[in-house]
Length: 135
Image 1 (cartoon, rainbow, N blue to C red):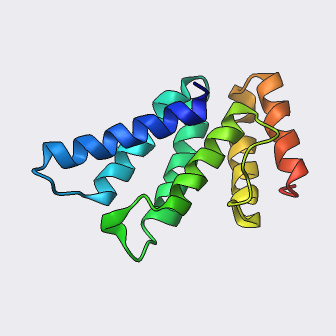
Image 2 (image 1 turned 135 degrees about the horizontal axis):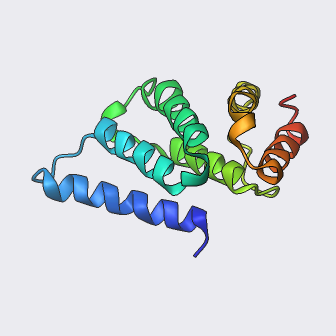
């Protein structure tokens, strides 16, 4: 199981527990906040960068949703998995869901955290950003 598959499986567990722990009621905003925490803990070696990315995802996409109670939407799941692929250094990740603003934001986040990141990890992320015209 790769990190994307694990992330998606963990998200499904979060959604299932949300319903079972609340008598069948579902709160998309609360689920997405838990997804943010999951994203951060899944990326402990770059936790500050992961926190910035998950906050960006939550505030830019989840909170802007027309149907917040049903989040995460399929598109927002695709975004969070694209962000995970990015942190995994996956050159072949499914990045089509990310727009130019997303890439610029990722570049800015990486620049802010650069001195605390492993050099190989930093080079990998910058290469992915460059290949998607984020620089």
